[in-house]
Image 1 (cartoon, rainbow, N blue to C red):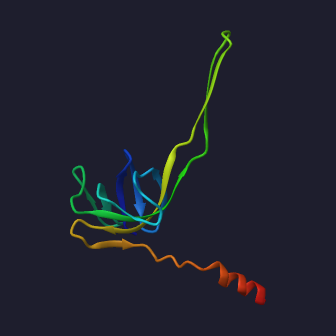
Image 2: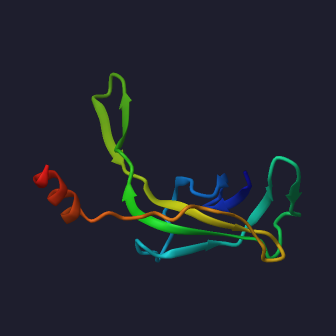
Image 3: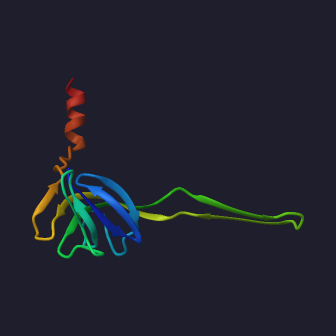
Length: 132
């Protein structure tokens, strides 16, 4: 199984094709679009690995953007004792959920590819339930 180490939003992620993961929100991106990561730090499989200095030129990873959303609220509560001073604040970090489709090597060869997703329509499923 091939994998790649990509850099996105100041963080590094080890990804495989078909994997779904949350990354920091990608600016100017809309759901159902293709995203290309060009900052590939390493790629390989069980037998061999290719490491960049610091990145591998020509290697890339293609992904689909599933959705943009916000995480759960994190509460920040500050209290200074004996001063009757309290401050409560909240924060919701934005993220993008992506699905990795293809991993390309530096010469443009496809190392691994995810299986296609077949979307079933709800109307067909409802008719099958009614007929039974």
